[in-house]
Length: 61
Image 1 (cartoon, rainbow, N blue to C red):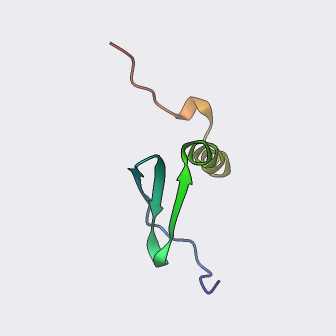
Image 2: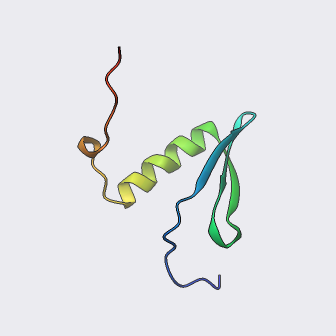
């Protein structure tokens, strides 16, 4: 891989049929199953140092 600096552009995420499509800078393009996308999202939050208390959930109702 030729890229050596972190990107400051967020990924674009879309649902396509039964998959989650992820695109981003420098030609990033992958497709994940629902299960893999959920596991990856949890890993991203963990790696970014986000605690469960940091995630706002809108109250129901």
